[in-house]
Amino acid sequence: MTKSPIAVAREALRIGRQSLPTYASKFSRQDFTLAQLFAILVLRKFFRTDYRGVVTIVGQWAELQEILGLTKIPNYSTLWHVEQKLLEKGDFNDCWQLAATVAGLAV
Image (cartoon, rainbow, N blue to C red; front, top):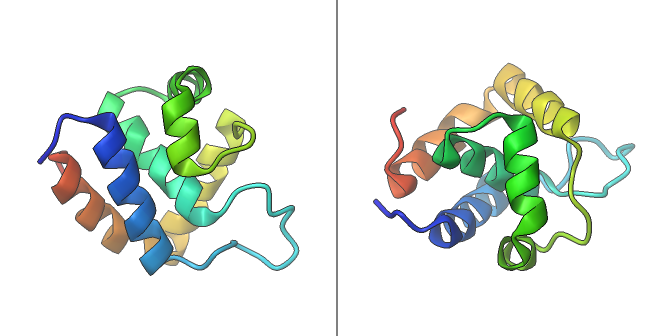
């Protein structure tokens, strides 16, 4: 369990890279990897905020952007759509269990 958002972001990104495909579809724009988006979704839970809130936090925190390898910030609706797709496929639950343990979040 950690209280550091930086540590949570690193671990969530690592878990996402190991557990998820790189992109949701070969036809996607490929602006963001699923691991990057997953890490942002974990940060959303960590900060106990909504999609717009986590986009604002990540957008204003250069170190988080660097750790996540972001050259631009995803729109809040992108996060919502990705979360729905991951939940639909069942990919999210296993990844979330691992990330939640590290972040000390309630599952």
